[in-house]
Every structure is written in C-alpha cells, then in structure tokens.
Length: 638
Ligand code: WT7
Image 1 (cartoon, rainbow, N blue to C red):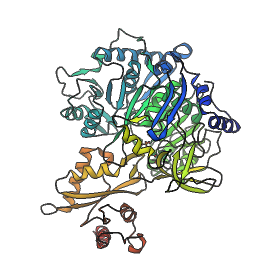
Image 2 (spheres, rainbow, N blue to C red; image 1 turned 90 degrees about the horizontal axis):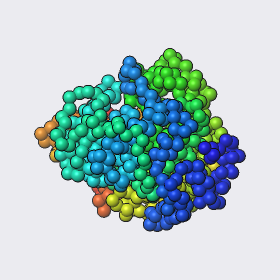
Image 3 (cartoon, rainbow, N blue to C red; image 1 turned 120 degrees about the horizontal axis):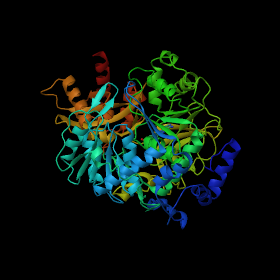
Image 4 (tube, helix red, strand yellow; image 1 turned 90 degrees about the vertical axis):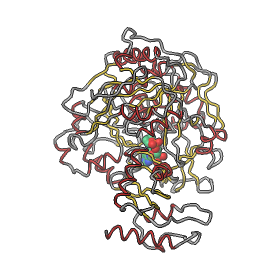
C-alpha cells in the first residue's frame, strides 16, 4: 500500500505532517482502502466527553479489505498458516481464497442462527484458524465479536457474556496447550448456567473428547457451516459502528468492555502493521500472542490480513515439547518476522543457548516485543542470540484501548536503544505530565504518559457505561487521554516505558487489576480482607503478592493458602493466581480507611527496614506494618 515509510527522514516528515494536519494525514492513508461511501468528516472529538469519531459518514465492511481485495492479486497466497500444539500433527494452510470462502460459509451459518448487524457474539476458542474465521465472519455480518481468552475461568466468561448480553457463543470441545488438555466446553456449560441471554452455542471439534451437547442450544461447527455459500456479500456498516468488544482489567474490580469501531481501527491496525514491521510481500510473519488479547486481534488477524500478509497462528506454548519449539517453528515455516512478549523471552533465556543451537533462524529479519517493559538483559539475549545480531528489535508500546501500536521503532529504520520503545508513530501526540497534570517539556524528563490528540484506532467507549470511559481515561488530567503508564523521555527524546502507575499489575504481559484479584480472594469464606500488589518477578515481570487477613481457627495456614489459590483460579483463571500469600493480622490503612499500597509494594519488593518505607505517620495503626514485616521474616525462616 501507498503508506509505507522507508527512511528515517521519511518518518520525521510523516510525523510532522500528522501533527500539522492530522485529518489530512489520516485521510490520505484511509484512501488506500475500499469504502462503500466516502466520509463526510475525518475526525471530530471532545476528550472531556470521551467523544471521538473518525471517518464519520463513511460506509465499509472491513472484511472486504481483509479478504475480497486480495482475491484479485494473490488469492493463492497463504493467509493463515496454523502450527498445532503437537509438532507431529500436520500444520494447516489457508490461502486467501480458502479463508474467504470459509469466512463466508461460517458467516452464512451464523446468519441462519439469527446473527445480525450489531449483535454480540462471544468467541471462547483455542488457537485454531476457526477462532479467526469466527471473528472475521462476525465482521462480515456487521456483528460484534467479543473474544474471551480461553484461559479465563467459567465465571470470567459468564461475566463477559452477561455484560454485553450475547446471544451466541462460539467455542470448542476443548483445547490443547502444551501437555494439557483444557475442557473449554465444560467451562462454557458452567458459565451458561448464569447466562440467560445465550440461545445458541457453536462447538468446534478440536480435542474430540466427549462433551455434553445440550439439545436445542448446542450445535457442532460443521453443522453450522453453510458450505453452499462461498461468497457472501459483506454487510455495509458505518465507520463508527462497533467492530468488537474486548474486556480488560483496570483499577476497579470489574473488567471493562473496550469498544473498537470499524473504520478507524481498520486504518490504524493496517498502517501500524506495515510501518512498524516493514512487512513486504513475501515475508512470513508470526505473532505468538493468543487471539484472546488485543495483540492477537490487531497483529494476528486484522493488521496482517488487511495487509495481505501471511500470518502464522500457533496453538502451543514456547516450551512444549521442549524449549526449542519457537525456533523450530521459525525454521519450519521460514519465519521472517517474529513478535512475542518479554516474559516468553525471559522464560526461554532461562534455558540457556542450547535450545537455540539446534536451529538456524536464518530467515529472521525482524524481532518484536510487546506487552510489558523489556529489561536490557532480555533485550540483548533476544537481539544477540535469537536474532544473531542481524535483526532489529521493535519494542512496541500500546494498549487494548489504543487498538494498535503507538510508540515503536520502524524496523530497520529507527535506530534502537535497549529497553526503549523509542519514538511515537505518526499520528500519535504524546504528552508527559507530572502528578498535578503539568506538562513536562523538553528532554530528560520522567512522569505520566498522556496522549493529547485522538488517533483512529482508539477506544470509543466502555461497553454499556460511557461514564466509566470518561472517568477511567479522560478525568485524571483534563483534556488528555491518560494511559496509566509512567514514562521517561531521555536526552535524545526517546521514550522508555516504566510500567503502570495505577493499581494495575502486568503479569507475564497480561493486565490484571489488584481489585479484581482481591475480590476473588475475598470470596473465600474464611478471608476477612485482602490487599494485592505486584512485585518484581524474574520471568513474569511482575508476580502477585497477596496480604490476607483470615480466620485460621479450623485450618492450617498452608491449607488456607492452597484454597485461596484455588478460589482465584476458579473465579478469574490461572493467570491471576497469587505467587505469594502472606496471612497478616491487619493491613496498613489511613485514618480514612484507605489501604496504603505504597507500603505493601515496598514490603513485597523485599524491603524490611521500617524507616525505608516512607511516611507512615498517616497510618491509623503503625504497629500493623511492624507485624507484617515480622511475618515476612517468619515466612522466610519457615
Ligand atoms: C499495558 C497495556 C497492547 C499490547 C499488549 C498488552 C504495558 C505494553 C509495552 C511495552 C512497556 C508495555 C503497559 C500498557 N505495555 N507494551 N512495549 N513496553 N510496557 O495490552 O493488556 O492492554 O496492557 O501493557 O503498561 O499500559 P494490555
């Protein structure tokens, strides 16, 4: 497409253009896509009301840009290459022609089940091509998908189904993940006992295990697919119609449904995919994320398919059957672009260089990182050992809410610096502010990261609760979008993301609100109160540390801790399981009853000196802190 930047001066030029004339800049990019009707206005906005509109008046269907348009130029090019969990099982290739007809057949089947424009469909699937087919089929009909990560528990699933009143769920009998088989359909059955809106469940057969099929409600995928229809006309929707909802954790207990719309998200995900990765026609691109996260949406499905790329979809985990699996897959499929999370890099680095030695990785050109700050050591191992020093690293900063990459080097163009996401992409106007919202100008500053002008891929609302969107993102600093991240701009104007400054943890690149984990812990009948903080973890980036007040009269401490872990696992899922639980006699609270997490964070980091904990004079009962520290020491001794 016509918008790929190919030099550093080109980047600066485009960046300038995007700031001086944002509407002209994005309109120029949007012109490369197929629309049914042109927009009346490029952008209209008021951050105080969380009001953002891009390409208003335009009509389109995003799937025509992902599928139909490629049928002329390269129908037989692989669109999705699927690599199964078990390396002995055959991989699958879906060309653009095959993907187009699979999407049309499934969309037609969904339509026969009643799915129409604007309807919400929940997708709870393993990493199989059918997950992507289901997403794109929804978009074909103008329906709204909400993908729920297959690692979430049945309760998380039912909460998400109920929040958007979905009437359809697409799932599978089960999932293979490493050496485990996960009974997804059982979890769906449990979830649906609390979901009165759900009418039909479509079940893809993956594990072929015996599952319960409820008469009248549950249908096999193969029975729904309408193979007589291989070319279903796409439903024309407005640029600002919803494309998908994706739930994400925040500072409060309840996940928010982040809403993305069709036109802006299309333009932004494709623009960033092509520029950041410098994707060229014959490249083979692999993003290791799960489609249950935004990374999977934007950089396995939408960005790559919009760009006519070959996107690898991997069902398994980095260490199965052994820690050379990623590199085996790179060699097997001649991968040129590899995009993963720092937690995976650190986990593999821990096995040393031997797993690398059996592979050559000579096809690799670009390495990507996403999801959390990458520490310098991991950056160097990735660069020097995985990429043999040949491949630039793109450290891409963005969020579920931003829809697409915001700060990143352009591969091979922007000079990189370990652990720096470097520079904002064109169209991204950053601002660093101090606690009072005062802008910190110039270089060599550190503060909170905000964005002052809208971008096409940004969230439009939080589903069903627009006030919450205003409160969460646009109220901390007036007139600005607040990211929740701390950031440093160094002497060269390069950005380094320092991590969350709110009550959100980043566990293995997954976002988890402290309140959400606390709510789950508090469900245990013997728990009186709890406070959760993140602490530095060598592989996960952050681990979860829970301070818990509990009634121990009829349980041992060890048993109670096990039960708490189990409770959290059942309510949220394995990713939210606390790494450390400490039973405490009290929590450090201010006189107004607020828990001072700052103190708990220090203790969780290993600080045991009272005088190093900062100001404790506002505490209602300072002796609580001494007791907690004594408990840490005891835990260690024990
Ligand atoms: C949070 C967003 C969208 C990517 C997947 C995570 C952290 C993301 C980086 C990076 C440092 C990063 C931030 C952000 N984060 N990328 N390259 N360097 N931190 O999406 O679950 O919405 O989480 O992930 O803290 O706010 P998410």
